[in-house]
Amino acid sequence: MDIEVLGPLNIHLHGTPIVPSAGKPRQILALLALRAGRIVPVPTLMEEIWGSRIPRSAQTTLQTYILQLRRRISAALPDGSLPSAKEILATRFGGYQLAGSVSSNDLTTFRRMTAEGSAALEAGEAGRASDVLGRALDLWRGPALVDVPRGRILETESLGMDEARTHALELRIEADLRLGRHAELLGELRMLAAEHPLNENLCAQLMIALYRSGHTWRALEVYQRLRSTLVSELGVEPSVRLKRLHQLVLGGSPPRVSETVPGGRELSLDLR
Image 1: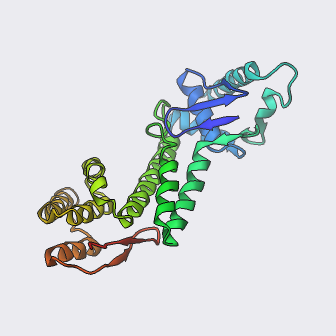
Image 2 (image 1 turned 180 degrees about the vertical axis):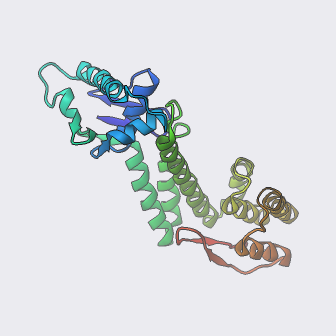
Image 3 (image 1 turned 30 degrees about the horizontal axis):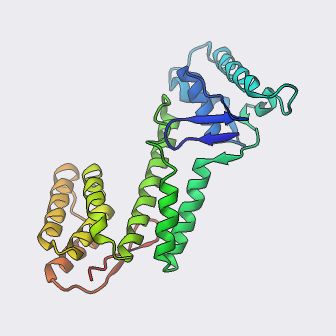
């Protein structure tokens, strides 16, 4: 079984797609795929599909959706092959489990490569980190589960995956900054800062790239724009880390400074 969730939902069994077109069965399959190998309790599946308004017929309707998914699985199986559809989408005590053997899973691969890239960056191997993190980000084909209707549970899962994508992107940009690729990053960073106007890490990276490219006043402008947005929308000032970077830019020839950011890693504020 091949599972892809970093974009549209794609699941293939023996090369045959098994994702249904109907919304609710697609939701169920997406949640089972995200937790492949683990039991998903019936109440969890019901909450995802119906939220707090679970109908009296929910149990029967859920069983119908499971039956539809098993039919698609069965149609993808070669004649006489094992395990059967009921073993691949298995009934367990209190829930269901996608129990088939998984050949590839883009989310698992992305997480592994992100961890590998992060470790390389911590070890000072910026070139390797940039390469590995770039390949991890290339696994994304759009927002996570972009074509799947989402209840509260899948929405939370999708937000977590999108946050992981942003984290990997920040790490890759940090690696590229350490490699002196500041001029190459300007276009990408301007776009990202516009898409994520409250993200201080991306703002700091854009300021560094601009400063190193000889655009000091633009770096200061980025800070002022972020500060105005934070104050107007959240009523808070920029972090101490960003204020320090602002002062370093104003100073003209600042030294290298590293600050710890959420997650325990360091973000270089090296403006040289």
